[in-house]
Image 1 (cartoon, helix red, strand yellow):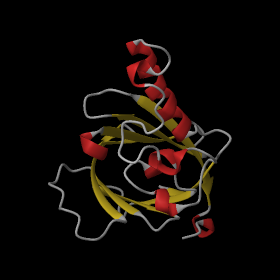
Image 2 (tube, one colour; image 1 turned 60 degrees about the vertical axis):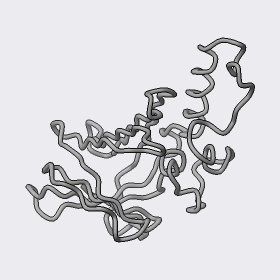
Image 3 (spheres, one colour; image 1 turned 30 degrees about the vertical axis):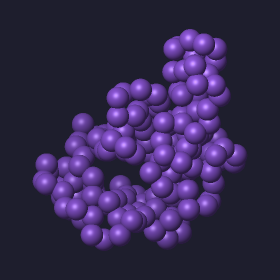
Length: 185
């Protein structure tokens, strides 16, 4: 739990990782480096890769679409839990997005609270918080949140693929610990 700020130097560039996974998949199919369809920048997700390339991480919250936080992670996040045994872990970010991770197997409610709120099924794997989520067009996303050995960093590892398991990619973001009072939300 606690507040965290992204460490750009130790984090992956999600956009590049997803693009590389797509290019690698097409290279493995033959017909040159882009497969039989020619060079493609749009990727397997609708609208292509948010922002279409460029700087990392971007501050433009309009990129927070179906793949937005994978290619454009929040700069700051706050994890909190009401009580140590509470099955709900709340994640707030500097873009005013809120995720509730429930670890008790409950049936999640349909989202009636707007686009900036999500309820996500999760589980504890030792001290790691692990999710399995649906991505764009039934794509698969799995996230793992874990502390570094010294407890000074939070590591988010995101595994993503399309609905058929194609274009698998792993992106890792590293966050440094903040004092809760430093969280900018």
